[in-house]
Length: 301
Ligand SMILES: Nc1nc2c(c(=O)[nH]1)N[C@@H](CN(C=O)c1ccc(C(=O)N[C@@H](CCC(=O)O)C(=O)O)cc1)CN2
Figure 1 (cartoon, rainbow, N blue to C red):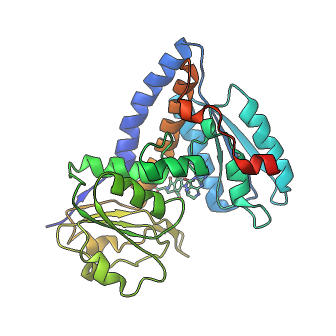
Figure 2 (spheres, rainbow, N blue to C red):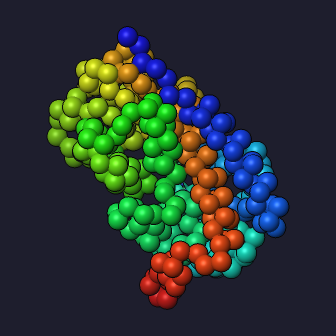
């Protein structure tokens, strides 16, 4: 039997209807949510993703501020821009599009973003929150995957989940989020020996390796849920994931397409986090644990 498609584009569209209503309520209370997107250099894929983020803001009524900096921007200038945005009360979310040019210390600039505005969820404080199970801003891609999984009606607790890829922005946070939901989680990565011996046991297989065609039907358990996070542009300009979609869909029970699966959900969850941040700004006293937090690295700069 052919797998059912988990449609990230359709789910995104549905969620964004609710977002517009939330923006309306915020505006009534005098707050127009604002998102600042910092893009350094001219990586073509990053430009597409930033374009998608700006469009999503427009669609939902969120004000977007696109900060485009040349590839040779000194780190100290980026830190100064981030400090300005941290202090700007009309900005509720700040993100730095990754990857960054090599001369910039990624951790240093990510740690410079106020934890109150860290809508990508990449600040160490939010990462720590994920480890103990109460992060305020879950990272957008794993957050989107979690919602996509929920649409299948599958109970995650007790399931064997295999995550292929151990990046800081997808694989590791994904594993932590599913562990929090009581799945039995295995993380595979570039040094994993005999990948198939792990993937074949997965009730839920999440692939974020950046390798087109990595997962073929023989590596997939009959009836598994397969989530493809990979986005690879082929020489003929086609975009494909890490999973052999046509083959694997004959074995899986549910599968995400590429494009139109996880990608749009990444952008949608960014808007969700931005709205959450704007809503938090209205609370008389935001969560106490965030009140006085200042990253040590900020003092060092
Ligand atoms: N600061 C961040 N940088 C990066 C992140 C992130 O979450 N925060 N993730 C990825 C890229 N990414 C978001 O920035 C992203 C990837 C894919 C899509 C998307 O809409 N994909 C479409 C296809 C788009 C195309 O290439 O034509 C799809 O899958 O349907 C959006 C955002 C790395 N950097």
